Length: 115
Length: 111
Image (cartoon, rainbow over all chains, first blue to last red; front, side, top):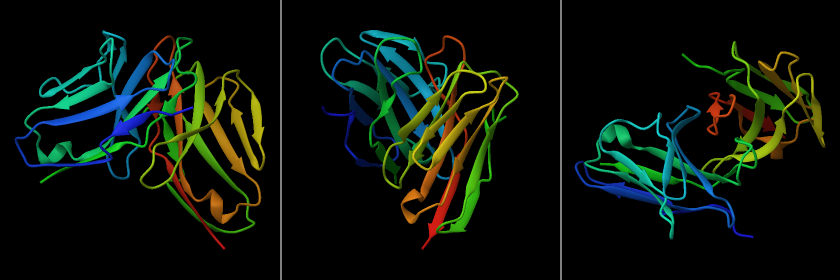
């Protein structure tokens, strides 16, 4: 049973470039969550998606960030025109259908460095 | 404002000692989870507690959920170097699916 697969593991982007982070959930999991972790900080919720739907994006910055979870393929977190402050570890988690908050499985994360 | 406060932030102990990590909030959670995270990896779920007053044991780890479902503790007996890592508590509120994380307790167990 494959867990949550995230790629790339490490991503270096220059300021102003775009970053695309991919997440393939556990097989059979229909819910995907993205979190961001800064050094010495806990994880901060960004967005919660089901297939083809954004359920809760209250943690997403209003500009430059977007997320999708298409019918086919992985979930994508997209950051346009990256800035140094976007440097962080981005984690994806998946879970089976509700009740909410149960059965979370996290991926190993993508470490984004903006230079 | 941090919704979930974890203490202590850092803990360095010798192998064989006991320790307790606390996770406190003024908010009520429908469930609370504990994770362990190692450097360069994602968090790994240790336990989920749901019922107020619930106690769960996982080998040398004992987890407790407060009666009012606002706080939790993790107790490790006879710590081993393999217990070293970042311990995170995370709460679920109501019908929301996302987790609210504390900042974590960084534990170091020296041989």
